[in-house]
Image (tube, rainbow, N blue to C red; front, top):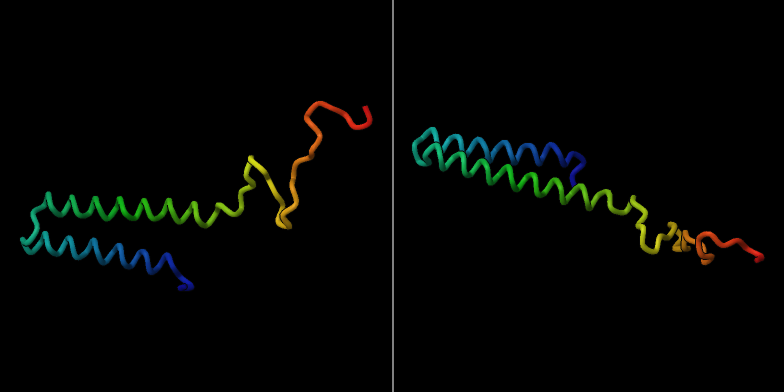
Amino acid sequence: MSRYPLRIAGSIVGALTAVVSGLVGSGLFTTDQGNAVTGVITGLVTLLAAFGLVVSTEHKVTPLVDPRGSDGASLTSDTPAGSELGQ
């Protein structure tokens, strides 16, 4: 695991985009092909970013179904809502 993952990701995306631009500039890709490949790169980056956000933050959210603390103890009481103890 790198200490600077965003630098690495940015470098990879920049390199891929530069390669596509170079292929368009040299005539090996048409402009439409270059735009299509750049669109695919952008879509993949967006998908990976969304997935990374979910994976990195999911453990910080308390679920509404069967919520538990960090020690595994239930965060809800067994008493039904609206009822009072001792009655």
